[in-house]
Image 1 (tube, rainbow, N blue to C red):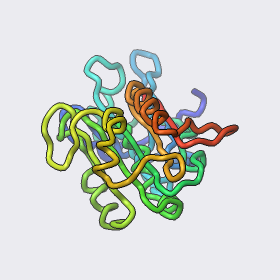
Image 2: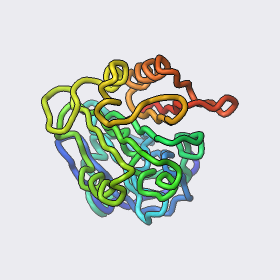
Image 3: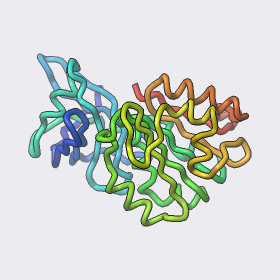
Image 4: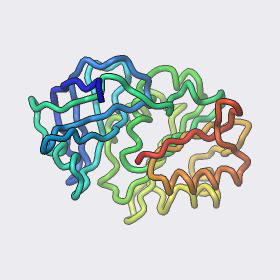
Length: 247
């Protein structure tokens, strides 16, 4: 890419053995919440790069990226090892259309994520626009283990700031976890468990739904939502389902 610029590592926060958040400082161009950038390192003479969404809101003066270490990956294990003062390359220009200005009007906004795909939602939720547009916001984060539920302090701060608007519902699929639902998001939509648990109905008249995460979740959740009468959101034909595959 022609727009690589250096970024200084300010902090590398390890949530557990594999999940980590990089805080960076770089003079990037303005971006919209929900967009992504690319990080890169020169490895054996080649620039190895991968796309990562911004976790920080556009108004922050530092950049935050939430990632997972892939044991046999080329880039993520090296990013996982970075320390304050180290350097990584970042794309100066953000890209992507998984943003609020692509979402039609609605009363309730459902933000459904698996794993590190909660990142772009945290960026959106820390800007004022989303709270002005929607009466209720449901944040659903599905992980395998309770230890993978990162950013709890930040989410709790949002709940305190918007107690009448924000509903948070985690899913933990591989162990029992307090306050979490078991299983997968698509099944909980298909059998009505998610709606019953949060006290809101998924319907085409009130709901806008954003899906971000592994392709299987996105595909299956889209199918479950379509069974409830919701449709994919297109610019030429606005609907209720806005999607982003996270890899």
